[in-house]
Image (cartoon, rainbow, N blue to C red):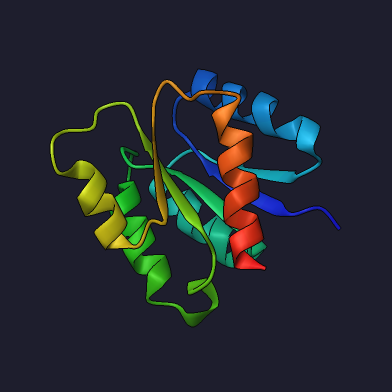
Length: 124
C-alpha cells in the first residue's frame, strides 16, 4: 500500500513542483493550501508524512505543527518544514515546534524524494 503524504503549500506553483517530484515514487498525495485546512486534512487523512510550508494563511505551519504534536496519533508522523523566507534561528524554531527536518525553497526536486524516503524509512 502506498504511503499517504500530506503536502501543505499555499503557492500553487510550489505545490505543483512537489507533486511532480513525489508522484513518480508511488505515494498517495493529499493537499492543503492553508493552516486550518492542513490541520483538518491531517486529522481526517492520517498521513504517513507531512510536508509543511511554514508561512501559511489562516494558521502558520509552526502553529499547525504544535497543534498536531499535542495529539498522540501524530507522535511518530514525520513533519518536514519548508519555507523560502528563513531567518536566522528559524530552522531551530521549526525543529523545536515539532518538525523533524527542514528544507529551504526553492525545493530541490531530487532531494525531496530522498528526504521523504529517509523519513518514511525511519518511521517504520
